[in-house]
Amino acid sequence: MSAFLYVCWDILVDSSIWMLFGFFMAGLLRAFVPSDLVARHLGKDQSGNVFKAALFGVPLPLCSCGVIPAAAGLRRQGASKGATASFLISTPETGVDSIAVSWALLDPLMTVLRPLSAFLTAMMTGLFIDAADKEPDPLQLLPPLNTPSACTSGSCSCGDSAAAPSLWKRFLNGQRFAFDDLMGDIAPWFAFGILLAGVITIYLPDDLGQTLPGGGMVSMLAMLAVAMPMYVCATASTPIAAALALKGFSPGALLVFLLAGPATNAATIVMVSRLLGRKSAVIYVGSIILATLACAVAADALYLWLGLEVHGWLANSGVEEGGLVSILAALIMLAVLLRAGVTLMVRRFSTAKT
Image 1 (cartoon, rainbow, N blue to C red):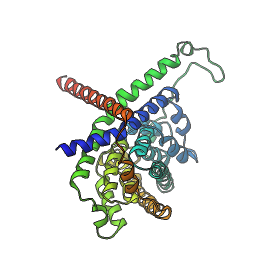
Image 2: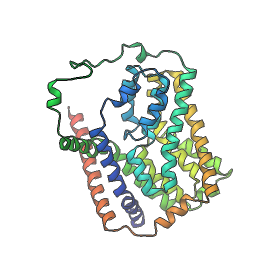
Image 3: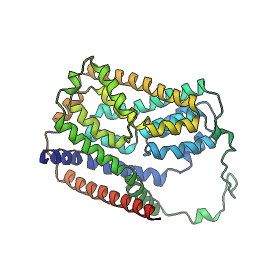
Image 4: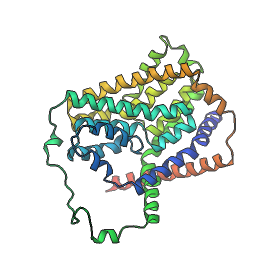
């Protein structure tokens, strides 16, 4: 038991400073990026919006559940099925928080490949859906959402601009969103990810990934079978992937787990079917499978060509003990996780009473 707790603490120490940095950046995005930016650029059925949707989704810190209402709003405002699907994929598969944790727990190359693969997967899926599914869906048949405004374009003398919050207040509101709302959504799953990573590290054989029959493709398919029905957000999947890397799984297999888990859990697939229609949902799942496996094969080839190994990088980086700053960050992160957990339980208890 002590060995298990030590491994979990070690993972927390390695990841906390970058996790906190990722949430800080998420707060800055919330505070200073206009909330209607995505809707203004994607709320029309135009060529090129699939590309924009994939690009906008990469840095946004939204999990699989949080992205659904955002995507529904885009669809109501006129975004194509392909653009909506593209946004639904790239947003939960990666974000500023998960990119930061990838840097801490994986290696620099995987930190780049992860958002790049999410972008390519989203692009491919969106283009396939727009090309193959022209049928209208219930949301698209509703009138577009129009936000009335008393201001005319070019100038605005509304009182809202005078009462706009100061930069400092916007900053504080953004950080409050990141460390209260966003952390509350992710905290249980991140804790689960750390605990599961500890179980994998302690109890699975060190050469498990290398002893599977059939080579890398079998391990990729195994990761796909495990990840697709399972709900795990992008941030929580990272410590699990790091533990699997130390068990000998190939970079491609890790990439499959990192991409497929956040984008294709059972609840999300049901919501995609309702949002875009059954035909698009089938294309959505099939395209993610094909694109993820293609990116995984390319990742294995790239690592082999460069002579790099994820588990080698992790083994070397894990030799050094965490410094004072890393330990302080881990204690802060532990306090934030506990606070988020208590807040979640209080909310559920209050809801149950009412």
